[in-house]
Image (tube, rainbow, N blue to C red; front, side, top):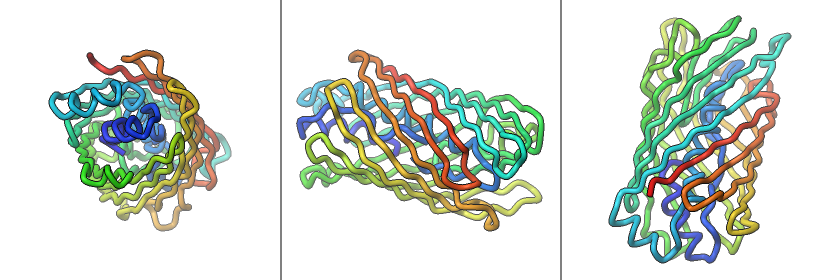
Length: 303
């Protein structure tokens, strides 16, 4: 979903609707495996920060020329919390505090993200994500530390704008910065590619995503590459408030694991020309998903 705020902001402005985040959550595309959760939450915050940029878009007519001529920069942070049993007798809790910086110019965008991760509980976690993946193995106790580093590159197909069709292409590389010894990361590189499609009908905006992730496997494990996707819709109530829902599904990295499935709901607020806030919640629909979770993201657009 990377790079989406740029073209959606322009498209929605042309359609007479305010530019707000398309969907906040880890989309969606978080591949959670056998008792997994960390990456999903990372994804949630990823989308939160990314799409909160929509809320910060300049006025419609000015943005087209401005965005194409100069680089624009956004910074985002927040928190993401989830809890689930993943087949264990007690719940495993995951807290993720992300930080990201994004630059965009015309149809191009680039982003870097990382964060601080805390995992506590008995579940064995094997997380894989389509975007801000935080892959790791945990068996007990508590672990804290730096999360993996994700690098994104995005391109929006502007030739489709006149047809009210907005297609965004995103490539992602995960650099293994999280501790494998602590169970916060796999110590392996991952890559992913995804396509996001949306359209605008007045204040209503449906969207969908499809991606493919090449998963790195640590010694002793054999993870498969996975397909992930998401569908949802967003509605703009006022120029400062937007809400949305989405359904996310992805293959499990382990063939014997249940398919991760989650539902998400969010509300986005435009606080000022520079600041935006998004609050979201989620519920899992499989034993390989969190029971419940939520968080918030705050985004700042540099003048």
